[in-house]
Length: 354
Ligand code: PEP
Ligand code: MN
Image 1 (tube, rainbow, N blue to C red):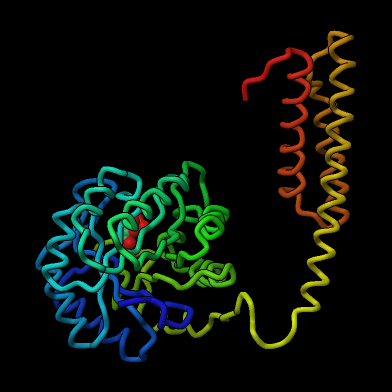
Image 2 (cartoon, rainbow, N blue to C red):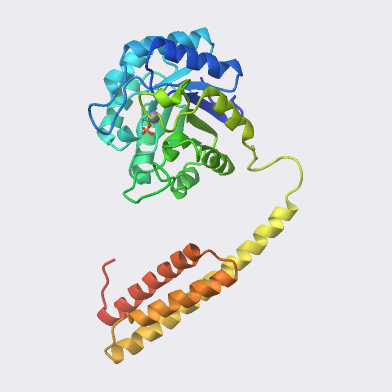
């Protein structure tokens, strides 16, 4: 399969894991009934964080998956984590594979898969690594590309974090956006299921992914999600899946119809505002340096914490009055303050180690 012929959004759906022949048959039957699925996903080897959980049915599941795919005329994909998995998947007649987040993080494993994949042209989906390290993601893509694979799709599934969050894996949208910027030809899809870890946020994350011009979605679906042996909280029924897909608004990055004069005008305005913001920032840094000279002469510390608290409170209050969110003003100020401390440290100590 190649992806050029698919319309956005490319839809990749199916259960987290294959649990039985009957389960995979009925899920694919329900998903293909209404026709809105381009590729079926189902794991047979499950990389669980802790042992003694359901770790997949293994090799026998490949046969069930391939048979059901043929029966309902839809291509099927599974996760591979090593060369052995890949060989078994290929022999069983799987149409596409994905490399999971716990594998992308390890260049040894990715290279092992790349070596075994050489000479085939199977489509490969590459999830982002668990850690927010774009280079590991790009590196995995390069390894698979160097093995001669032409159909590669990146999958954004969010990033693990110690911080408490409403997400199971924090989206950190800036990372897939940066990936799209440095590899503009690469297609990127989103896996809202593993980002959310629950059903409530799926629609919000799916719509946001499409509005960032991602190519498609991977969504975990199960006929009886509450009884699923893995990822029960985030899986949805085929019916909810159709409702979700039907509720999404598909927007184009560069619509061919209409002219873009209005957008061009607005962008010119934004360019102009950015110019003024950065000119003002350059002024501020010059002033900061003068303050640094004064502090040096008068043997003063860089930080006077009362002054910093006062700035924060006052700017956040002013920002709020102009409609800016507190968190936004605070993030910008912290960034400016970090640079100020850096510049003054340079002046006071003639050195700096960031
Ligand atoms: C999966 O897709 O079932 C899976 C294990 O995902 P991830 O690698 O994103 O955790
Ligand atoms: Mn899962």
